Amino acid sequence: MHAQSQTIQRSTILAALLSLSVAALLWIGGYHEQGFFAATWAPAIASLGAYILVSRRREEQDQHLNPLLAGADEDARAILSKRSTIC
Image (cartoon, rainbow, N blue to C red):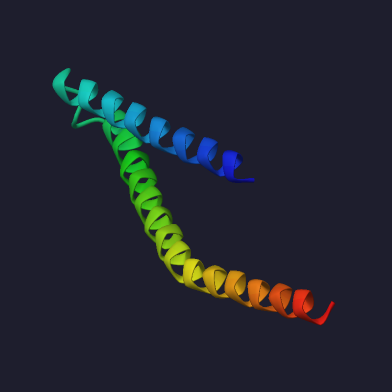
């Protein structure tokens, strides 16, 4: 699941950068007043914004889960140590 998530992230950032480069080429070529420029610029900005938001949320979730998982490991060790003393 994690590898699939990384593939989606890479695809999103690649699509956004490709769209930005096409928009830049259209701007340099003098087509910035036509609809082609907006058709490539707007999705690129939206994709980059979504990528940044998702990345930040994922980092926040990881920060919140790490202490919980660490606590779970300590609880599991305590349970295992109690079992070993009982047997």
